[in-house]
Amino acid sequence: MIPQTNPKAAYLAQREAIDAAIRRVLENGWYIQGEEVAAFERDFAAYTGSKHAVACASGTDALILALRGLGIGPGDAVITVSHTAVATVAAIQLAGATPVLVDTDEYWAMSPQALEATLQSWPAGAPKPKAVIPVHLYGQPAAITEIAAIAEKHNLILIEDNAQAHGATLNGRMVGRWGKAAAYSLYPTKNLGAIGDGGIVTTDDDSVADALRALREYGWRERYISAIAGMNSRLDPLQAAVLRVKLMALPADTARRQAIAARYSAGLAGLNGLALPRIRAGAAPVYHLYVVDAGARRDELQAKLKDKGVGTLIHYPVPVHLQPAYQGKIALGAGGLPNTERAAKSVLSLPLFPQLPDSDVDTVIAAVKAVW
Image 1: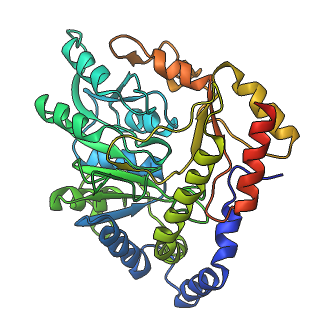
Image 2: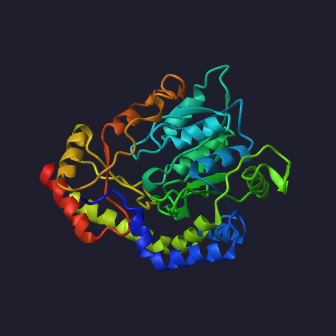
Image 3: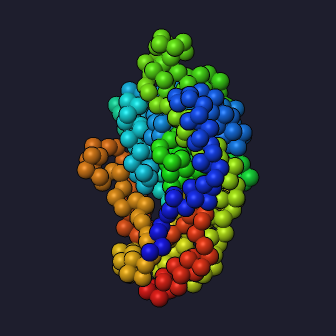
């Protein structure tokens, strides 16, 4: 079976360096925070061109910390999308704010038009909009230029959910560089993945960075003294050491992801009714996922590919607003979410990870052609 993703392959590709990094931490004897984490934060800040990077325990926590560090909480509404990992919406609620979900565009990311329409028709008496969180889904940049302009027009704080788009660019500018902060997941299958959970927040604002560092560790600015009410969300040095190794390989891994995506796009071109990933003008996606739109034949395609030894996944099968924990309990933007609901019934993620050989890519292409 060709897997849709394979984090073990990423470890094996750098086994010697990763094992050495883990031994270094074990022999050092410092197992919480410390210089290893600080070094990774410096490395990641340099990679993204950010002034500060503050590591934490997960991508979900990265969003929570970003929201809290920017003073967003109870009484505030935060606009995001429903076609995303549930973590985006869960983080807003865990920060005490109220999520409002808007529809997506043809690139499966936040629609600027839906965002503007929702703000123009904001209901009286509802929590006031305080922030907007676009998601750079599948490694494809959202319409961040337009969204940033709308955020500025309406005095909204812009936070980027960059969990799936480490290193993606739009018009030569890396995503994560438009807002007051950007949140990244370091989950094992992400473009930059730990061997376990992890997250990191980037910002150019000194005061926000100071708040993030305090919030992630009980609100401490002085050890054992909570200056503010915080939480426990620390990236451990073992993960930081692994991530420092993997960060050095990220540009090459990104180039490989892009090459695999190009091979898919060339090999699958022209199949009637199978829509391949669209690329926004000026965008350089990093292809966390290669997602096709199979329309009403999605489930049939997935089942037949499985029979041929090709693993696939659906990202995501149920929009957040239709999941049991949220259905009927969460505000939707103007015009509803028709694009979001259609995507959930039609998208399919093909195998893609940097260690996937061309021969396997060609096998997947042949299998799709055979069953389409």
